[in-house]
Image (cartoon, rainbow, N blue to C red; front, side, top):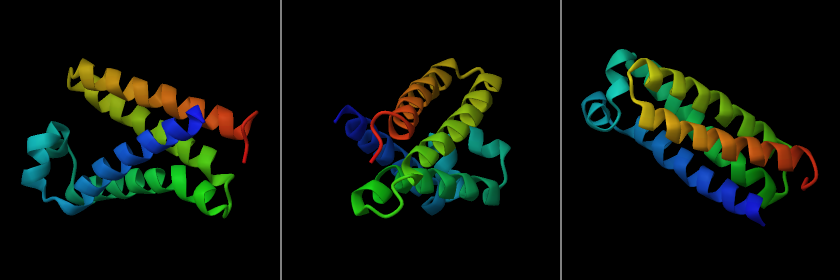
Length: 121
């Protein structure tokens, strides 16, 4: 049950942030995400797409019972994105944002461990 809670919270977070990166223009995003100015528009949109795919991958495969093995793989993809985000935040001296990414990483690793291991679907 706890894994479902983690998956749901993480899915919402990744879908909201990913959707913002896809839909909003560069000026709007720069007000929320300062790092956007250091990356090209296509790169930011790709990150948004990947965030959204992680969010969907954390819920849809298990909810529809179609390829539920994709859930832990989505969690690992989220870990990769969060690690990359942490690096960017640390380079910008945004330690509180990097710490938030560490929380995401811990939750994503927990989901991956649980869904690959003892709590598979």
